[in-house]
Length: 196
Image (tube, rainbow, N blue to C red; front, side):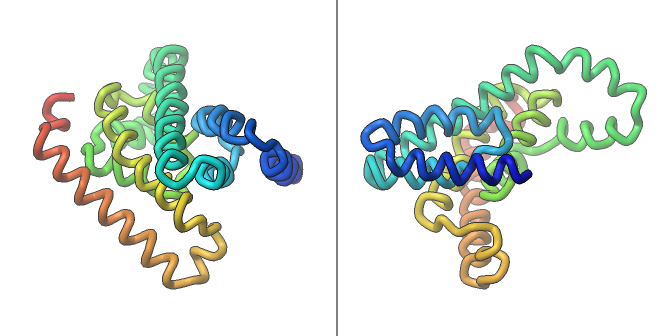
């Protein structure tokens, strides 16, 4: 853990001094954040917003976080899913967990993805090992990641501040409610649960 903490400090300093290369490096790191669990997404989103402006910075961060998460989902599905499904039959507890993941409704999946502090690496991994359809996961990413990027881009609160400051908790709850309402609307309009 100390290595990752020191790596994050070094990475923050490097990006702050990288000048025009900062948003390019930041986009690459946002993509990798979906694959590598220890990268600090909020730092890269903040750098994109500071260097590219709030609209373009948020849009590019949103695009690359979707691509990184979907790449992890796709690689997991392609490389590990079949072997995992065969081993799953022997383990009853793990089987129960995977049944819960397999039966997630679209709105539930969006909510899980939209939680700012949820580790996207594990969400992508779990979804890749499950039987959730590619398109259902992709659409959930498209909606859920909007709220993650907006939260880290405009609120930028860290975990400790969020847990100690009631206003930050209310902001998170409002974002979650918006994600839920929006995903309900999309699901009703396009019938995603039935189609995928």
